Length: 217
Image (cartoon, rainbow, N blue to C red; front, side, top):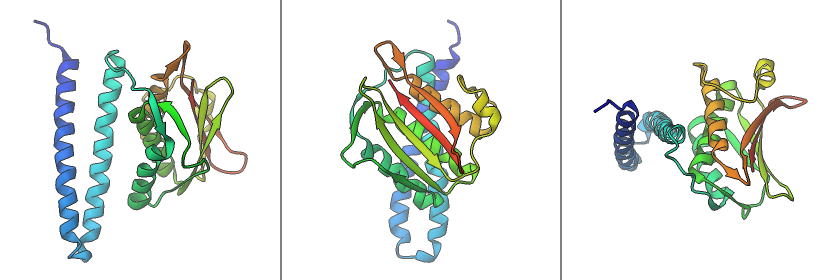
């Protein structure tokens, strides 16, 4: 019987995810206990920051592995965008001081895979944070043919010109920014409708900051 590295990797990642969920549960209990000892709260915030990042990475790896092996079928359903965006916005503000504002109505809804959009947004926010941004605006555009776009604008230094010139197919290049764009693109490509796939576009604003468009077919 041949050795299947993908099966081993998937099993290990699922086990790590289960352990991570257990850690987050214990972390919540510890946080309640620390409420009586507030001078130690900064240690809890560091633990939350690292464990949340690790949890997100595990979910990303599992999803991308399934997509690459054609074993992942996006659960395209109707969701309220604010239900997906709000928890991430709260997390990034509490743990990183990154302010994320939305300009669309709270009751705006679309059809998408919630886990994949969460992966895309998390990586977009992390990229902006690591580039030096402290504020992001999220806008929604809807079109008559049914496709829709989330546009993210930040106040950081913007994308490098080489990234803008080479966009089309992003590949992991060993840096956090490169991996982030790759994961965002994979999450969007998994969304298909009427023979079309999702995509991303990157550019810089005329004044300051990066502009990222998440295009859903």
